[in-house]
Amino acid sequence: MSERVMRVSIWLVTAAAAVGVVLVILAGQALLNPSRPLIEDAGFSHERITPNADGVDDVAVFSYRLSRNASVSLTLTAADGAVYDFRRDEPRIAGVYSVDFSGVVDGFVFDGEQIAGEVVRRLIPNGVYTWRLTAHDAVSGAVDERSGVIEIAEGDSQLPEITVFSVWPDVFTPNRDGLSDRAEINVYLEKEAFLQVYLLGENGEQIFVAPRREGRDQWQAGRRLFDYEGGVDLGNDPPPDGTYTVVARAQDAEGQVVERTASLTIRNGGTPRAEIVPQFVGVDVVFAVQPYEERFFSSADHRGDLIEPPNDPQDLALTTLTVPVGDMLVFKLTVENYGDVPIRTSGPPPGTVYNQDQRAATFRAFDESGAWRVGIDCTTAETNYPWRWGLGTADTEGVYEETDPQDGKTYLFVEPGARVVVWGGVRLTTIQARNPQNCWAGLIHEDVEISVQNNFVGNREVELVSPGGARAN
Image 1 (cartoon, rainbow, N blue to C red):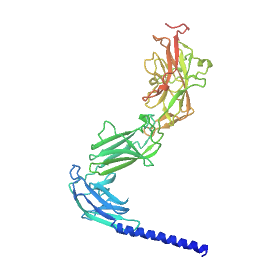
Image 2 (cartoon, rainbow, N blue to C red):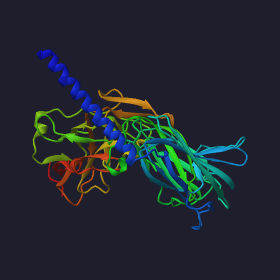
Image 3 (cartoon, helix red, strand yellow):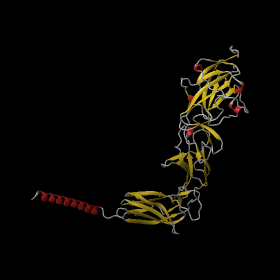
């Protein structure tokens, strides 16, 4: 016999043996596991429920067994022919299943019914229903079905409807600049329900919003208020800039769910970060003394000339400054916005000169919550950082103007990464009990904070002397 014939014979014997093994296995399975129905068992634990959240017969358990993998649907058909879905074409592997049923099915709305928002889950009306469990085996094409009846009685079918839902403003900038930093979410519930409000991002992430503490609890009916600031007040970065869906979701004790949605855009969101940075020569703040001239005087109705920033190399020394009474203590420093968001600032502008008893309000430059300003303070000052200056003007590089759409006013902002030079003067006219005294600079985030790194910067000893140069006593 040739080698080629032998190889063919061996192959035929091997194939025949394999076929035989398969036939034996199939025969064994047929003997041990005869043909079984796709649905082997199905039914409710009892045939009448009263879903009114009183704790008695609110729920029936529906159980079923599948002999093979299948997609299943469970529907309920009312006497008038209306069909309600409890499950629709959901994949299941072979096994035993059970689920609580409280009469709540996929959301629906009756003809002519006006509901604010989307009904996600809803209790079917009282009545006797034919339930039908259908299983479909996609591999073999087999379909199996079981059915029975169940009665719904005494159901509390009032929906947890959200009749009021508003988000204002719909564009906000959570960056602690005092402008549109918060979004107010207003919700009114007609029925006691568990209420959640969250932002839904593009990737499906849910960002939950806490209700105001002084408001109602999460189950009470009535008005609920939510105050959203993006987490910035807690020192966290807000969600990335973009447009989000705001979802208000109410679920009552029966399991009914109603949702309403709105749009909210986050713009220029982030934690503001700025600091006083050292001068190129290494000192934090340049302090100097300059003679006062009447042209520098400012009041509420008159703006005097601005002084030039000190630039004498001798001003960089750290010795005690001697200031004749009536002359000016002047300063210069640099502020950097090292964060990712613009920071807002307000006047008076750099170069402004204060008399010792004047404050920014004297120039109608009132404090503005969220604005950043440079301040000068001294040991004997009666208030904290009594003399304050803005971080540049619209003509300063890295500073720009923008009109707020909410109030129509124009504000100044310092761009991220920008450095601005701030300078000014204080005319010292009164000798205090403590002489010499210390003076220093600070970077103030109005009504927010003066951070540790921006407080008591460039501390310098200052001594007042009489105009003739003798030490004042």
